[in-house]
Length: 337
Image 1 (tube, one colour):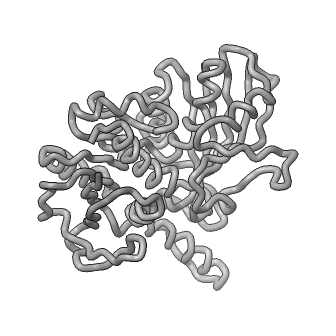
Image 2 (spheres, rainbow, N blue to C red):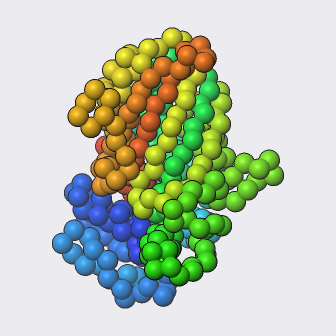
């Protein structure tokens, strides 16, 4: 069976990646519709070897659409997604708006595929935050084997997570420094070129940033509400690819060697060991890759049953577009659409 698929936010970084991923994975689509705001109407985006003309989201009739892959921003999703769902489409939404809605499943197919059946309450499925996705893919085999008590994570997140304008700001700021000219930050609170910024999203009342809060509450919803999560999220001058150093405290004993074996067998994970030729991986090496990559797995002697590891993934692919397409594939494989 082939499905009519709409991609909302098709001109953005994630929307373009969604179209590319649909084509690469040969998702059975009878028709693919590219949607964006009225100012983008008539522009063209690539879908495999085809060029699709952008249609206006505000006036589009979703009747007859089977699946919507959505990444237009939270406010836009809040408005259009329920309308599209009432028209019969299943919405796979990449924004933050629906993630903590108790009637909307928050899905990473390698981690909690069983939760997808709950989508029928609202016809909406939420795609988690990019940094949460890659972390829970790596945590899943450890949790299954030895139960995770606490996670302390420090992220090093690329500017593509903030959109195309943020990528342009990094490029232009870097260029301006080499030409000895001044360029004030617009997309970020501080200069991003040759710098790191310990703020992603807004600050909350307890001085945690919203990105850090997302990692905490989303991990609990996806993996286990009992897990304690301390997240520290930092923006770094990298174009694509999020990295993180993860410290895990487990209930049961698990050696680094045993953890490596679990990582090797896990779906969607690739272990790069220090004994290998690569040693470890960095964001530039995994751009365009589907898997989450784990390196530098070692024991933490400062706590009982502690482990550390380095985790890297392409935030536009597994952190957004690929995970959304995998959710669509999961719906199909379970005959839910």
